[in-house]
Image (cartoon, rainbow, N blue to C red; front, side):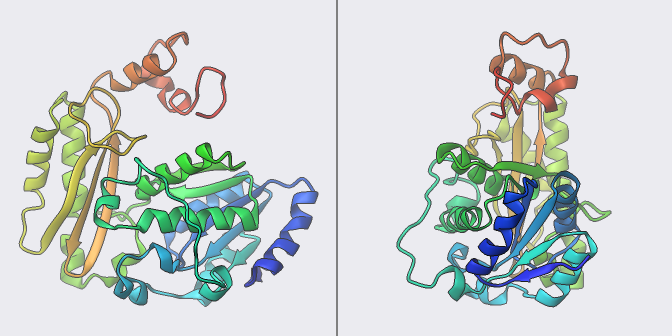
Amino acid sequence: MNTQLMHSVAEARQALSAVRRSGTILGLVPTMGALHAGHGRLIEAAVGECGYVVVSIFVNPIQFNDQRDYALYPQTLLTDIEFCQALGAHAVFAPSAAEMYPHPQSSFVEVTGVSERLCGEFRPGHFRGVATVVLKLFSIVQPERAYFGEKDAQQLAVIQRMVRDLNVPVQVVGVPTVREPDGLALSSRNQRLSQEQRRIAPALYRALELAAKRIAMGERRPEMVKLEALAELERPEIRVEYFEIADPAEMQPVARIEGPVLVAAAIWIGSTRLIDNFACSPPGGELRAIRERCPRLPVQDARTAEEILGYDESGLPG
């Protein structure tokens, strides 16, 4: 199968209008390129669930609060297209910055609350840029389903809130993080690490894993969980930007661990910023969350947590 390459908004709209008229389920995988196996998992999920899959490849300038970071972001379009084709994507939408922002941008999407802590606290304007470009992509492609990695948990929460609040007719699908054998989450930024820095980087995974284990064992005090986990990151080569235990929907730090939480962190190793997170729950926490959200729903055990936590009592996605 040949993957169609589209560079302009007009070209994409014209090509995809026929797909929508046919009634085919259209899926979108938004990326910034430099594709790796983590992106591959997103594409595979989309191909498995949709009749036609578009992968967008666009390094979005308005989500970078540091323009040096934007300039250094890897751009590998030719190999990315081959990657998409090998996984069965039907089209690649790869616009230029001038195509996406032909005029100075005056309109932005601001998702308050959920975007303000964690990464949002240290990257001013980042999630405004993310939400704006994703809404533009939704408008151009008009997919039924859009796929995002759970490694960027706050980004996923921002997009889910935007879609809900603005009545955007897109189902947002989170796809689990893909990791190296030593636990390091796959990221396009990993290629910036030197050999020695790459050796050190899995300390982030170990710290998150340690925190998740302590929570699973029943520790309810975030400060105690963080104190033990941060000891894993006490190295001169690592600078911790944040390490938080947050509500997974609101992305706000919790005062006490009573139900499902997200343990999330960002660290710097040299000039490379790495982020990662674990979703975890104290003993009985998932069952408690289910009962609080759906008090009239008979739930016998936590086995149904994954099915129920994403739904309200009407049976529709929450």
